[in-house]
Length: 249
Length: 297
Image (cartoon, each protein chain N blue to C red):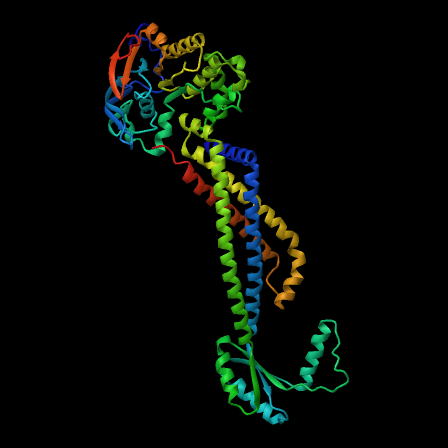
C-alpha cells in the first residue's frame, strides 16, 4: 500500500470498470476567468480507478478550479474533462445531478447543516435525491459505522469535535457509493493528530475501492504517505509523481 | 412511489420554509388576501351588473304615452297597427285606471300606501310593446313616433345603455386596480421566496453537491409560494362565505333587480379565488426561483 496505483480494489465503486479506461482524464485543459486570469493552463491528467492522489500547490495554483471542473461546477474554457469516458462539457444541465452522485466531496469547513443531527445530515443527502425510506434506514447506520460515528448519530454538529464533524461530512459524501471522493483540505481545520485520523479514514475508504483526490497543504502527511502527488503552480501542472514527497517550487 | 416521496418531501419542506420565514410568509399571505378580497368584490359587483343587464335585455320593449281623450276605437286601431309591426311580440293597452292600480300595487309591495294628499290624480294611458328581438326597439320607436295618438315614447334601451356604461366603467376600473394589486402580490411573493432561498443557501449548496435534481431543489420553494397563495385564498373564501348572506339584500337594493348572486355564483367565486390564489403564489415563487436559483453551468 505504498502506491495509490497498487491499492487492492476490493470492488469497483460507483459503476463498472470499462476496460482500462481512466476514471478521470483531463486533456489540454485551460480555464480562463472573465477577468482574463488563467486558473488552469494546458493541464493533462489521468486518474485511474482506485488511485489515491494528493493535489498540492500554493493558494491560487488552480487546485480549487480543478475540483470545480471535476464536480462540474464549472466547464473548461478549452480542452476536455472526461469522467469514466464521458465528456463533462456534454453533460446537460438536467443530467448534472446524476453525475454528482458518482462524486463525493468533502471540504475543510465540513459544511454540515447545524440544525440537523449527524444521522439527519447523512440521511438528508439521500432524502434530497429521492431515495426510498428503507434504503435510508439501511444505509445511514452502515455509513456512520464506517466512519466510526454510531455513538454520535443523534448529536448536532456543534456538539462534535472537528474530527468528528469531518467524519460526518465524509459519511455524507459516501451516501451514493461514489466512484471518486474529492477532499478539499480535509485536515485544514484540524489539529495534527485528528488530521492523521482523518487521513487514515480516507486510506481505508480508498482500500475499499473508492478513488481519492485530496487537495492539501499538509506537507507532513503528503511526505509521509508517499502517494501519487500532482502539483500545480500558477495554473500549470508542474509535477505528477508516484511515491513523492511534498516539495515546493 | 417515487413521485409520492418527492411530493411528500416538497410539501414538508415548503411547510418548514413557510414557518421558519413566518413574518415574510404572513405578510405575503396578507397581500394575497387583500388582492383576493378586491377580486371577490369586483366579481360580485360585476355579477350583479351583468345579471341586471340580462334582466333588462329580457325586458327590452317600448312604452308609448298616449294623448289624452283618445277614443276606444282609435286605441284599438293603434294597438292593431302596432301589433302588425315587425319585431313586435305583443301590445298591451294600459288605461289610466290600470296605471293607477299598478302604482298602488307597487306601493303595497313595499309595504306603503299611496298618499295623494286628498287630491284626485289621474295617470296617462299608455301602450306597452314587448319585442321579439331587442334590436327592433329602434324601428318600432320610429314607427310609433309618426303616429299622432302618441305623445311620448320611452324605451328600456336607454336604461340598458346606461347600465352597460356603468358596468364597463366598473369593469375597467376594477381590472386596473386588480392588475396593480396583483403585481404587488407577485412582488411580495418574489421577495418572500428570495429571502427563503438566501436563508437556505447552505442547504441548497449541499443538495447540489450530493446530486439532488433541480426539481428537488426548486419545487419546495415554488410550493411555499403556492402555500401563501392557498392560505390567502382559503381565508378569503371563508370571509366571503361569512358576508355572503348579509350582502344579498344590499345587492338587491343596489341593483334594484334579482341578481345572480345565488349558491351557484358563490361556488364560482370560491373556485375563482382558490385558482387565482394558487396561480399568483406559483407565479411569484417561480419568478423568484428562476432568478435566484440559476443552477451553475
